Every structure is written in C-alpha cells, then in structure tokens.
Image 1 (cartoon, rainbow over the protein chains, first blue to last red):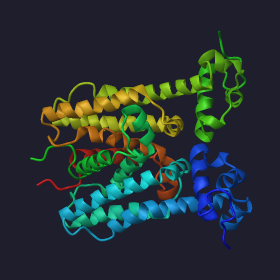
Image 2: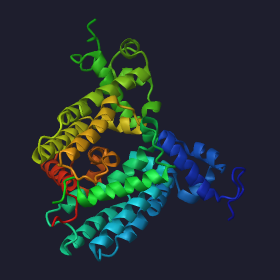
Image 3: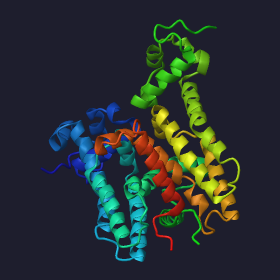
Image 4: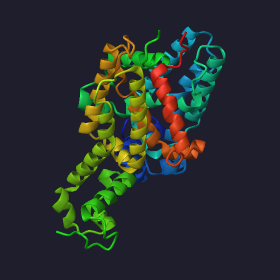
Length: 206
Length: 206
C-alpha cells in the first residue's frame, strides 16, 4: 500500500503525517480533548488510517511516545554504555549527554509536553536512568566519583535540568528574553555550566 | 455577605471552594477545557460567584496562581534573604530551601500541574530565582562558593529538581514504587543527597 493519497504534504507517508498531526494536537489540547476525526483532518488522511496503522487513538499515542523515547534516549544510553575510562572520559561523556539530550528534547518539544502531561512510561528512558546510576557506581569503584555520593537519589538530576530547559523554553523567552530554541551559544554555555555544577558542586575545592 | 449557602462543605467560604474546585478541574482537564458552569457546580456555588470574586475565569486562574506563588515561594525567598554568614550557614539554608519547597510543591501539586502546563509567570518565583543568583554571588564574594561557578546559568538547578519530584510523584509510584507524597524518610534522604550533589558535585575532593 502506498499511502500518498492525501491532499496535504503528499510526499510524507500517511503514518508519519498522522504522528505529526496528532503530536501537535495532543500538545496543544491534551490527549483527552482531541478526537480521531480531528487528527485525520489535520493529517489529510481518511479516518480508517488511524485504525489501519495504530489500531486506535491509544495506539497512535503509544507510537508517538515510542518514537520520542527512541529519538531522545537511545543516544544518551549509548554514551554511557561502557564504564568511564578516566575522570576526563567521565566528564566528556556527561557533557555529550547534556548536549545531545537537550538538543533532542528541544527538537521533540511538542511530544515532550504530551509525555510530561500524560506521565508516560518510557522503556528507554527508564533503562537510561538505571544505566546512569550504574555508570556512576562503576566510576565510584574506579575512583572517579566520590565514595559518599548517594547515586540512586540523584539518578534524575541531569535529566530534570535538561527536560526543564526544554519544557520552559517559551517561559524563558517571555520572562527573561532567552531564546533557548535558537540561541546555540546560550545552550553551549548552559551545558558547560551545568556539567561544571554536576561535577564540582558550588563549594570551593581547597 | 456570608457565602455559606452551598450544599457542599458549607463551612468553607465560597471563594475558597471556587479556588479548590477550579484547581482540581484545571489540573485534571486543562484550563481551556473547563467551563465556569462546571467549576461552580463542583464548588456548590451559583455562577455569579465567579464574577463576584474574580471577575472572570481568567481572574479565577490568576487568583489560583497568585495563591500558589505565595504558598510555595515566599518561604524559600525569606530563607535566602540575608547573605550566608558561613559555609555551614549556606549549606543549612539551602537544605531548608530543598525541604520546605519540596513540601510546599507536594502540598500544592494539583495547582503546580496547571502552573507548569500554562507556563504561568509568577512574581515571587521570579524574584526567588533572581535572589538565588544574588545569594550565590554574595557567597562567592565571601569565599563560600567557587570563584569560577557560573551562577546565572544554574539559577534553576535546585528548583528543577524539586519541581520534577513533585510533578513526577505519580510516575515514581508507578515505575519505581516510590511514594514521594507519603514517604517522609525517602524525601529526607532525597533532599540530603541532592543538597550534597549541589554543594560538592560528583568528583572526589583531594
């Protein structure tokens, strides 16, 4: 089947158009307030297409969450796959986690808002959080992380910071005039400063 | 005027009943999907009461945000009002900020969800964030904070962590079995561990 019979954006497959349109509508109105009819109209597909590709509106939502989970968390997961080989390697990889995850969250911001609202359970995210704790525990065993750090209690510390930047991007623009989405220099400085906080804390080293 | 003519919870003034009912409905369905009629029905008041007390649905929402802003951010603001007198005073006050703000956010969780969704602009929150940066800058001048800390870029670091715990309390319960709302021992350990991360970072001191 070649699903290119729609009037809007005919080059994009109907499945992708449905995901795109539904993501935007869920983000704007909330999952519960959007009808399948509305989604199909926005996607320029017939109503059968949702049932054909996703079974139901719930199935469409799950496909959106699954794609988000893959797009955002597979790379950070891979970055922490092997134990840190040195203190420098630890810092370099955590900086990459900050940078790539923030970029991915900003690129997927519409879906992120739905994920947050629906408190979605995401397999890769949860695997990443578990891996993050193991990565720190391994680094602790190797002496690159403080022995008295309570790793389990800080598993979300980097991610909270990143998700919050993406979630509040419009708020930052209206309250502080900072354009998180487009200001790459701000993002670079933000990632560096927050990695520094995460690595070294606020208290002077003496 | 004695607004106790309602069938539901007649001891609570109508204004408070409206705030309570609207907060719950906005949290559940989103601000845009809730009608004034629905709010008044849930609050057990006549429809005129919203206009009497708040002017409009927008006015009711603003009153809810204002109350949240006061209930959550006035105390942390006060805790950081004066410069830290010592490294110990800095740590003690930041721990109190963690603990009291987390408690307040959990107590106000329904409204917090509306605040996050609507990206509300809150005066006390914004004043707190500015004060937080000044507090760190003053502590830097006094030698209690690292000279190379980029204070402006980390102004949200503690708050992100706290807001995220409150926001994801149901998610933590379903994915990890951790009952943030009721497990005071977990919260105590969480606040201590995150203060430790914030103060000392993950890298060993040598």
